[in-house]
Image (cartoon, rainbow, N blue to C red):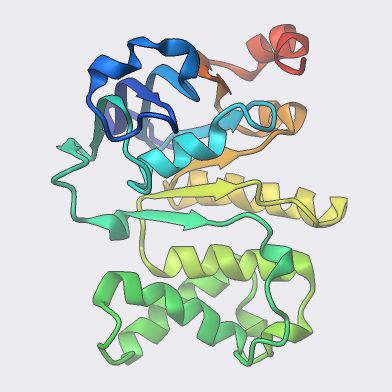
Length: 254
C-alpha cells in the first residue's frame, strides 16, 4: 500500500481565484466574483496522493492546472509548492506534466523512443549539458517502469498510440519528479490501451510512491482509479472517497 504522508502538503492553494478580466490585479477587484473562472479554491495534495480532478469542459480544470504550474497568476489567494510560496519556488524538476493529446504527437518526428525519453533529463540538468551514461541508466529504468524498454531503439513513428503514451510517461519519469500531472491522458486511445494505462498509473503510485494528479472529464473512470476526487466547477469540492462521488456524480454532469 502506498505511503501517504498527510503531514506533508506538497501543493497547497488557499483562497485562489482567477478571472481573465482582472488576472494579475490585486484581490480587491475580484470581489466581483461572478467574473471569476475559478473562485475561492482551497486545495491540498499530500505526498503519495492519487487525485482525480474532474469537471465539465470549461469548468476551470485546465486553468487551475496552469495556475499550479505558474503559467497563469491568480487574482487572489496563495499557492505553496513543497512548502514554499510559488513566487520563490525554483525546483520545477520536482513537478512533471504529461500534456493532452499525446496520440496526436507528430509521428514523423525523427527520434527514437530512447531519445524522446532522454529529453526528460534536460529539465533536471539544463539544456546544454551532455547526456551521460548515468542519464541513459535513468532513462532505461523509466522505460522499464512503463514496460517499454524493449522498444528503446524504435522510431517514435513506429509505435502505437498506447505505447506512445507510455513513452511520454517515461519521459516525465526520467526527470525524477515527485508529482506528475496528467491532462486528459487517455483521449484518442482505445479502451484496451486505456485499461493498461490506468493499471500503469496504479503501479507508479504504489510502487514508485509518485504523487499523481489526473485531470479528466470521465468521472466514472476517475472514481474507479483515484483515491480522492476533486470536482471543479468554478469552485472546488473535494470528495475523500470515490464512493461518495458516485452518489453525487449526476449533479456534476449537468
